[in-house]
Image (cartoon, rainbow, N blue to C red):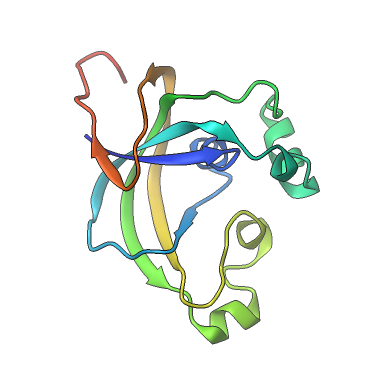
Length: 140
C-alpha cells in the first residue's frame, strides 16, 4: 500500500478525523488508497497550541502518548488543491482545519477521505515522499 509519513501531532489528528487536509509543498497527481504513517518526530510546541491540544485531549491523547514509527490509519487521497492568494487571505478552508495545516499561497492541500484508524498500529520505518508497505491480511 502507498504510504505517507506525517509528523506528529498531525498524523494522529488525521487518524482521529480531526484533520481532513494534509498540506505539503508539492503537488501530486496520485489519487487512491493512502496509509498514514506517524513519523518518529513530535512537534511539541504544536501540541501545546490550544486547538491542537484540545482536539487531541478529546480522544485521550497528549504529546506524551502519541504513536510513533507506525502506520496508524488508512485513507483515500481524493484530491490535491493548490492554495491561491485568495484562499490564503480568506483563511481557507476555515475553522480548526486552517489551524492544523500550512495554507500559505503556493502550497498544496491534499484532501483525505474515508479515513480509518487502525486498531493495531503497524510498526514501520518512514520515508520521504510516497513509499510502499506490503499490507498483510489481518493487519487492518
